[in-house]
Image 1 (cartoon, rainbow, N blue to C red):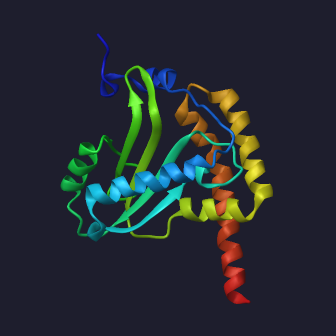
Image 2 (tube, rainbow, N blue to C red):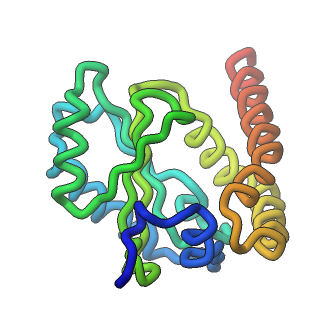
Image 3 (spheres, rainbow, N blue to C red):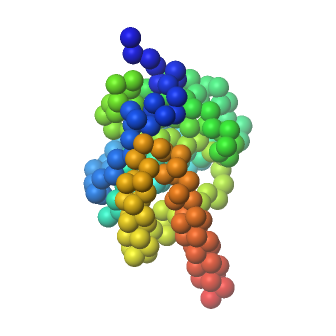
Length: 193
């Protein structure tokens, strides 16, 4: 009998869903736009402040895990219980994320006890704010040399941590922080000019 994903340890999940990297695929933008419509229909435009395609699949030319990351900014007064139900009804699995900013929510789709099941999506739900994921994406888009450097880093880390998502993510953290700081300085300099 196959166990559910909720019953598996991180180590079992990492074996089932190793780090996979792919060359950039233009269809990722189309996948994002189609899924954006699904999300809007599920939770309603009156609750959504903005929706962003984030992560490496949002950066043309960048080596990426073929997972579409979406950041949904919601109104502070949103009933999160109904949001969870609505996302589950359209095929998403809810993951409480206590280490993430409020409302500490993430939804995933494209995973099954047998392995990947179609296009994988990660939907990060946050209240409206100034998010580093957007800053990082925009900086990589406008600085192709930095994006190539990030792609090389990801390739090296995939080789080291193919079956340990936590280690892979943690090893990218300093690079991401540095790029976000460069972005802030660049933005401040352009405002001061």
